[in-house]
Length: 359
Ligand SMILES: Cc1ncc(COP(=O)(O)O)c(C=O)c1O
Image (cartoon, rainbow, N blue to C red):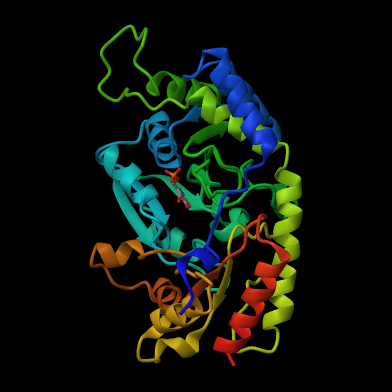
């Protein structure tokens, strides 16, 4: 039995000496709450997307909530989102009192299906939350034709393009997450970015209450600290190197799995993939006695921790039906460890374990 100490984790942040130096500098400065580093991080992230500005927040989930508030979405309004995603978009929608309209995904890309989204549009629809899952852009070209404001959720995807356009630049607002194991980490953290200065001002005013001229119950303390921003800024310096390493690792997985009965991540024409996750589909495990759980436990015996990429689709929590592609993804999708810090030995171990359990 493999011990936990030798287990290759499913994800792990990449922290180096520069990151530590950046954090130490902030600690020594005595200014550790929201301050100049947060401002610099906002400017740097806006520069990354080529957008007018950004407002740093305490998490990606809070950034989604403040995006909805910035668009003045609330009770009586509907927000479309895919079912196959973490709870964050649904929670944000509940927090503002709006109704979440769940739609199915495109099984090839795991992203929101624009046709399903178009069927869900009503006269109450005020926004579509568009997560770009696992590093692959959603079909922004089709979605923007629906004429509904898009909130691009870039928590899992940065620096890739759809039909030549950088993702995060098409929607009205864009949201990032800097959780510990995201593409850029700050421990926790999020950001709302946009070319819409008015929305950004509203997000800025909602993230804190100090100095507010009125009592606004939708304000809260959702600030990012300079400690987090310094780490984020330091990580940003290495984003390109991270991306190259991710693409290299993805290629090794493609080779290692080429002869196996597995659907590998598909990259539709006109898109690039950032490989935040390497998610394969294994329909044969739908009928296995323990399903994917049995496979994951066999991989753990080999010292490789794999996970379901989405813990549970939203429609299952809400006891809704009619989401066949999300159901299929839920039963067949497996996320294999892929992050810049994986060593070559670990990569070999992952290849061997996958070959063994999928033989
Ligand atoms: C697609 C997506 N949106 C939003 C979030 C929420 O981000 P955070 O964990 O920073 O609140 C996540 C985080 O897992 C995510 O994967």
